[in-house]
Image 1 (cartoon, rainbow over the protein chains, first blue to last red):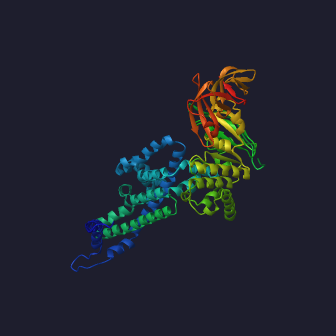
Image 2: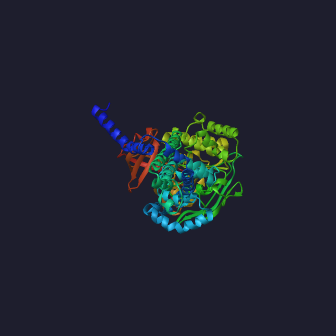
Image 3: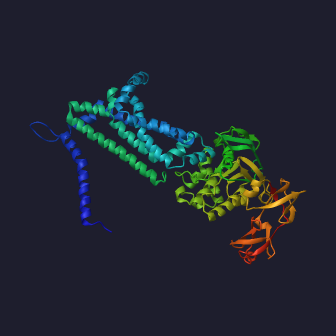
Length: 262
Length: 345
């Protein structure tokens, strides 16, 4: 049965309203970042050029992208084996692990950062003062979301039977986790990565208080001195993050098509 | 039995979980190439035996050896045993051929050799045309056949089957049961088959072990297990048995007025004889000592339940042509055939 004309109109209006809600602010930002101020109004790409040519800003983009990558890798490396081990060997510890992983959600980021600032003095002393050391605190921040995504994925497969089948065929625990469990929870890992990337690229409190120049911190600095350039930076960031997240989404879909998550 | 299998020796195995004693000094010897089925009610410890042999669980005490080599402390991935699980265990992200070749890949087999061996194993279970499918594209029976091919591909020292048919429907179960036996005889691998299905155990095994409360009550060829149960538990658990009042004296049991040989282990004096329904004869007789209460038609055979004048129910299994002459309420005379019976206290 085809939808009635009234339903079609309501649907079109709802879609237009939805699109306007999202795109009007973005268009306003684009407009603001390309306006020429003063006596001769017009358009300029100077602010956009600044974003892509300023060395400090470019470095902050690279650091934030690397931070996102390292956070995802460390999060997966820590969480997946731990959760698999708990499911197979100490199921009673699941509640404790869940509690610990969800804890950062209940503590404001500011409190966490103030609490660990002294620890970070040692971290920077030992590992250098690169913003990449923020990876450790970002892993803590993404734990609650990553735990949920991975827990749902692990619940959808029979971890014990798959692991035991692989073990009986001669697989080491490393092989079990990397070649049997992880390919079957790709959806969960990508979901966790999705959240981690979004969180890391937008995190300001920890980076600012610990004095590291990540993308959000650099953007805030530009905003204080050059509003239109900050708008250009924000739009460019959104474009990059959207592209990354879209990439992850398509990767996840491809895995589903191959039957990996079936 | 072939010379390709290895002897398995489980000695005095005990497994304690908290306050529960899942295994209580179990000893089991399997000949090379033999198929032994472990049978018993839920929680009797049969799966624990298999998991300890596989290395997936650790015995509290006792030893496991295969081919004379002590494997008690060897981890599961170094034991070289193929296992088929009750739950579907194919790796969902791999095709059928990759599943079968997985164990070979771990052993460093090259791609061509792996594909050839996996193909041979799929031929063995009749699924070579499904080589490029994923697990979710197969039926339950096909998945278990692939799991069998995968377990056999690595040429295991022992094949372990943990209730592999219990998730399948009745028809597929019988087909696959026969196929497992055919394949096992063909490859000659020593096999331990755990099941709670008596028919399954009796049909495929060279010897059947009946377990109860962590102990092996009896290990014997199927026919012997059925006809000469060693303990009351075995007599009552395997097949149907009537418990009829009996008296034992000098190796002879008197049951329903007839003297029959008493099996070793029978309790002397007054007790109850465990008599199979097919060993009970029913003859219509107005002066008899029992009355027919129900006649259940089961195809070529029928099950006739009679009540003795003292109130004891007796079940007899008769040819349907014979049983249909009997109606509920018919007075009958019951006798037992002259086969050995176990008399318990």
